[in-house]
Length: 356
Image (tube, rainbow, N blue to C red; front, side, top):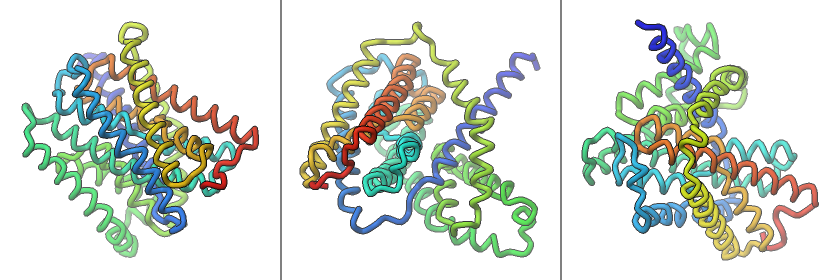
């Protein structure tokens, strides 16, 4: 095997391990216990940030011809679904990091944002899994879409429902030599088993890693905390930086930069999400300032936006121009959200005003 091919395969393996660990650790952040008093606002926020933006993203592909940005393995249908997801995606890791750095992660405002973003993340990653399954079909039909959605839903429901009791049962087995030898190894085995199961069911492996992390996050506090910390360190110290470095290396600036596409997507998606969230929260009797804070938070695309773009590009669903536009939009929206909340906290602006 030529050295260049060997290096390419090795780099590809590190890239996918980094992506899987990134989504596995993202699953740890999925919240499971919501304060009943916060559910109403979280539900409103979820509706404003997801329902209309998804529909708007879908409708945009009908009004504007985006077929030129379809990848070699994509189709107009998969592009429509993918574009709708890209408009609505929100970054839990970035927004939670902003909240932690500013010391507001324990506020009621932050808990409402993270609760809504958690549910949104699960639903949107499930939709992406459906889109990637459709990409495998030569000419995807309605039956293919229903089958892909059914497989994805079954995997998610069964894994989230049966995963925790199965893990608890396995933990109590005396013959569980992997657990006894290393909790870190045991945790990684669980992750890659779920990834392998997802692949066997023709469900996107990125979604499999995300759900595996969400299941582990439901285990009793203290049981796997050290293993989670070690995986964070392993991923953030080696694999995940390489993943993002490869993503950055693949961005062809200025060759694949389409300014009309980039500014069009950035302006359209930010306006749709911002206005929908603002209007929804105002209807929910939140004050103008609070509604604006929610709009800024849910417009943060960050890592999920980059992962979404790289997965779609790797699978040939989108071309390089759309890939570059989505990655840059994820970076710009994350920087904008961070700047806004630093200003708001520094100026002493209330996150939840009387209306909230």
